[in-house]
Length: 274
Ligand code: NAD
Image 1: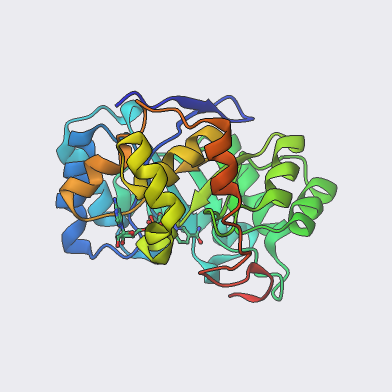
Image 2: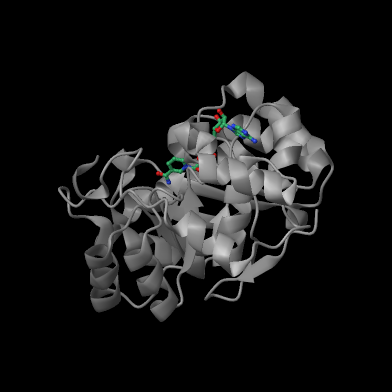
């Protein structure tokens, strides 16, 4: 696969297409990641909450790839907020992964009710300074949360990983990200494989381009500049999903997909989750 890199604001390069391992059982991680590496994936998105970092680390070791050939992201568990707690928690992730650094470490959820994400972020700044995380970012942050980090800390997050698919295109956050040099990562990029993929306009575009609806949606993300890491445990879908670098959607077709916006989330609202 000819996956382009995106340069993050810290200078670190991230492959625009990766593999997400949320809800993959520990036993399934090895085979799924094996198929993904075979298909050309070089970026893995996990989290402390997914409880599969040990198996992710083993699959990377088994791949025979060099450490600098695989981009590894993990995320801070919701109950580990706080400066020192975040630093300790990444150390535990590194032990489970069998690595001495991750490429990207994210605050998984802002948890505004607890109101500690600014302090947590200062712990992340320390982890970036000592090289245990090559880049640091956030996930599920809304504009006011990003504005607080900007006002009270010295580091702009490299990425914000948010729910984003044609039903929830997140125009406001994407505009904020563009303005402030934050890369957009899209979670549940194909709407968790649900109703979205049987939408008749997407089915029509799939026929037009000789692709599947999932590929059309993933290509839409790529052309918007989003970083994606769809999840699958099915080898044929794992290769299908990354096979989106031989088409280009016409502007009119990009616009058609943009019209599928319903504003409906599949996941929790970050303002009151955690
Ligand atoms: P997704 O949109 O990637 O959908 C995955 C599901 O779609 C699969 O379980 C499968 O049922 C189906 N599918 C996969 N390929 C398909 C294909 N080609 N055709 C038809 N159906 C297909 O949803 P996701 O797993 O929620 O999101 C992807 C990744 O995003 C996760 O693995 C995780 O890494 C990340 N994520 C992050 C957060 C967060 O809070 N930061 C939340 C959810 C997910």
